Length: 479
Image (cartoon, rainbow, N blue to C red; front, side):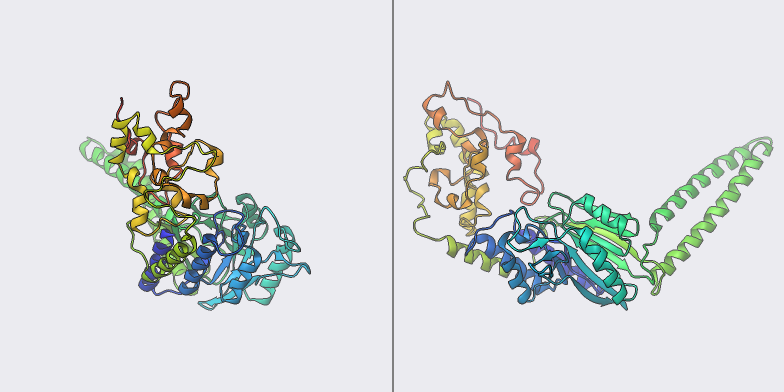
């Protein structure tokens, strides 16, 4: 969620500086991180409500519905629409095959009709009476309607479909001017022109902010990459200049320039031709960037939302209120343990905690206590985030070598005893119960692999993580 505050700050800052008309769009998979979310009050729904409030406050124009957004149920999304959230989807249909959400939103920018529509990828399990219609059946009906009812529209498609489906759509429907993807497993995708459709995508859930600057033309065709054309011509001109200088120097130093005369003359002609092309191209660029240009033009950039970037003040207030709600939700007496709790671990759990390790490995335990891993849970307490189920998994001791343990209900982490309230020995070396009983038969992992570390040290939480460098300060001494 920290990336969201930085994202809003960037949006506010850019909007204040350039003072241009803008569209704020999101192609979906915005609210949840998994496919199924329990009913009733829980942290995931509280977080989703906070995200929608932030998007409403900043003034998002349209948000496509992705399969992860449906995890809380369609009623949850429809309530958002009733409260003014701009959810759209052209292919989520009810029992009567009528759309359950607005199919498009229309804006006018620089005198051009801009229409934003969306296609949703189906979730793993559909809701009773609900159909997520395939794009093959929706677009043949929708696009003629949009192009007939509006003059020369700039059509934007927000899509949570796969990369291959987006490619097919772009190839078959040139009326779509811009396609913004929201694939669940994709990173930043620089704009690619497919047929007449510009296709691009920003990495999911708060790691980057994508900025697409568009100059609208008189017709819905994308202009050529003029910057590349200029660069190519300048490179050719530079090469010719170098050749001319070299040959003219040789000619001046020689007894006769006849050997080089014809080549020099030819290169001078080529030089003039390229200069003429550059002048013509620069005139074309000036015309295309002026109001009323023929073709649409674009520039794209991705802003990495680094941890040291400023946050938006109003967004931080909403997130602070969310934290208070989460603490209140999870602050139940039967879930909490005091720092001195000696209650036994959950039945069947083979984690023993660092104090058991200390009985045989005092040197290593003393070293561990000097590392940031030992204070990982304390940092959450200091920030009042120790009841946050999004933070806890990386600040307590879990068995990351056990696949089933990685999928334990996050709520169970609230009742972990003090021995596990840290990134302890067993998170790197494996659960220690059997080893503590028979160390010769049950060996521990000596050095965790990179995958173990990357479970928590993700780009979202640690954008400067390098395994080879960071493993050294936390590696226990031998002995």
